[in-house]
Image (tube, rainbow, N blue to C red; front, side):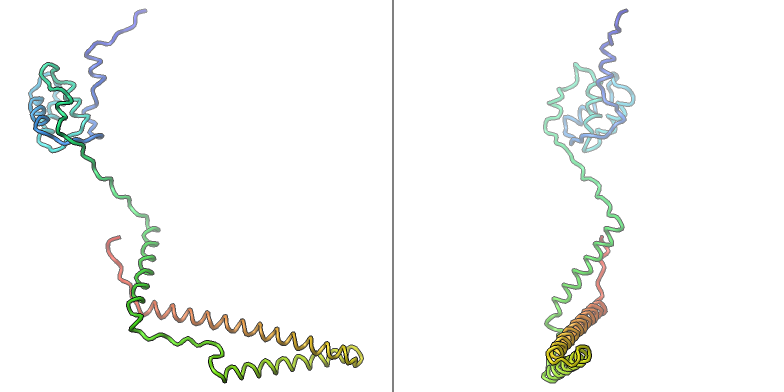
Length: 228
């Protein structure tokens, strides 16, 4: 069985790119390219589709490489210019890619970050104008210090008495054990007083931080830019 050998015409058709495919490499049009496209409009060796493409491309400043090569391949080899000479002086034209659209979640995050940055910038600008808030520190006066000391002393003394009386009743009025019970009650009273002081201080810090954040947000209205 003999194998079928493709003819020269079919090989040329296989080598030619699809004229309808205008994607790919783009090159700038020079005068030699424009004159070649003008002569290709009247070349009867080309198909009607390629002649229409050549007529359309000769008025443009850029042409797709695959369409130009399809026209050059289908034209008369004896009259067409060399391909390297045809591209002499032309350059590649690169199109900028389409900017990627931001998602709604990313837009919200960028908006929040912009608001935070604007608040910091505003606070930096007006820090010399707006009066600083007086932060009330614990035991800032002698009266507070004296009152707290008396309160702690009274609590510890009460704890000592309670412990002393409890151990005296439990251990038949043993002086050593009664004193140990008083010391234990004193230590427990001191620990309770320390725990209450820590809780009170942490609550005051939370109240001050919430008040400062609410006042800063109400005193400044951020400007939202339209361009996102």
